[in-house]
Image 1 (spheres, one colour):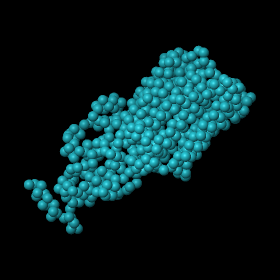
Image 2 (cartoon, helix red, strand yellow):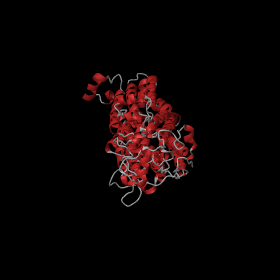
Image 3 (cartoon, one colour):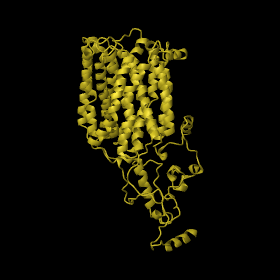
Image 4 (cartoon, one colour):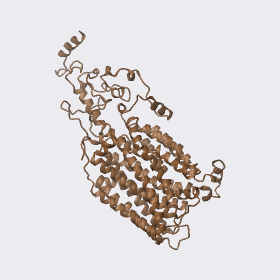
Length: 599
């Protein structure tokens, strides 16, 4: 009876200009304008960088307003803040520290744990120590990626950082080689920082490609700088009682850390502290980008873990626990915005033709349930996409080459017969010098090249001037002639610093562009899973890279007259880098805009 009188009143109501006011959705079931608008908005937000638009027959192009006086705009707005940049950059520095800080002292660690090892044959053992981290990450990267798509990106970051703290310290305390390998393996099992951060960088940019490029330049640049800074730091902190026997600071630290018994504990203890600091920054400043309806909240254990980690957890409310059918199937997060105000109420009266809030739609688009455009990603479905598959293969090949260089360089530096014959501290000095030049190059190099040449041409430039550049490193055998034993001439120091800085800067450019283009080949709700697959495959090749490089170097210097053996190693790696460059020339620069399209 009340509905009939309401309908009757609505028929005679009109606005000041004589036009009839819009009836509510419950009064006019055939009018699906508002629900189509919300459906279009949700779909667009789900995959902002793929440019997916809802063009259903009943949908109309609309512009939303946040309140009176606001203007509509189709320009994407990024979600970057100074705190977010600091948090993600610190997490990337931690990621690179956990991976590569061991490289400068891995050979010396092997010599301590295995008495029969010396400077010339330490390569194979150093390769095992370096690759055990990647072997562990290989088994869990895809699982971590799936967890990030279900429990949230922020939760996975926090869990990885906390677990990495524990296993980093255990590695520093390992008294035997098998225990050291087991600790590094467990450290890899617990780590998936790289894949999640790559996903966050894209999603926080919120469709702003300029902001995405700058974000990658800073965040991924921190990862590249970490590949230079962290090995240097690891070299400085390794075996401090031998390197700095007269230092009062280290004598004091030795009194309760027992660094004489555990000479490689300090760099790993510092790594654990870095993990905790990064975890605090992530918890404080990083916004969760996975939409609430896509997160699994029915498993209460993850909420308990979030509370234990100090993460912000929304308290359940009456509206959360009430039957969603009363709201037409919408979840609480979809029904209310972050301020707790109804999204329907945020519409102005000029949009709805009335000043009072409308009733919820009777047949809404159910974002909490999967639909045909939000298929769950699997390894098979991801690899079925030709564009995704080609980009992933390129990433895996390049990761293998990168780790070969990172493993071979310290072996070349410490080799007395076929290399420079220097110790950990001097290796750290070399990498620090390279880091100084790298800082001047990396950020402006990426942003300038991408703005001028685009992502794919920038990728090709980076590929040509990165790995193939190692062919220049054997020239240091000439420049360092006549130098004091165990030290480098200034000419050699500057030359290696510049060459290695250019190599690392171009390596960062190549990795960033591959990451950015690969993310654009899949829809938003599959990115964390895809990056998990990317990290899993990368872990396989990165585990093989140090082993292959260690065997190649040790066998070459053993079987080929010194110093030609090291020249042969750098030549092989350089030609492999040229082969990768040729592969980038064959990569198409057309990425599908529709998440259902494969090219």
